[in-house]
Length: 142
Image (cartoon, rainbow, N blue to C red):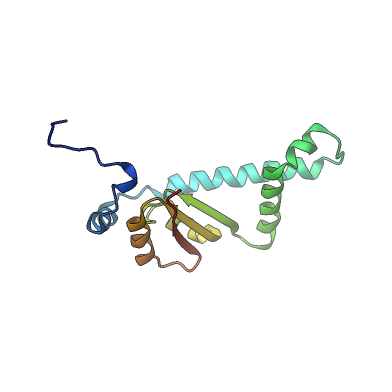
């Protein structure tokens, strides 16, 4: 790196509105199979967890205690929700940028998606380009 080049801190890299707009236009998208693979893993994990919880009748057993911790309860309720709706209840996309990647892809699979980023101008771009009623974008600096 030459002396004339400066490193731009990550938190301010996309604060320039013009740079954010250009980034949004030129951002390469991941292939659909990447997200399908992730969703298949989530479905399989939820299914296994549901089977473990539903087959454990002893509330004093170690597996019951482990499965009913906060994560177990959350996934259990997600599984129950899946019986009523083909969608998962909530996804959070941390570091969503302009919302072009996982945020938009997840829209058909979740009732609500929250996209969060440390760049206010990236969130502005995401909001401008949002075509989904179940996606909300938020700027969070901390």
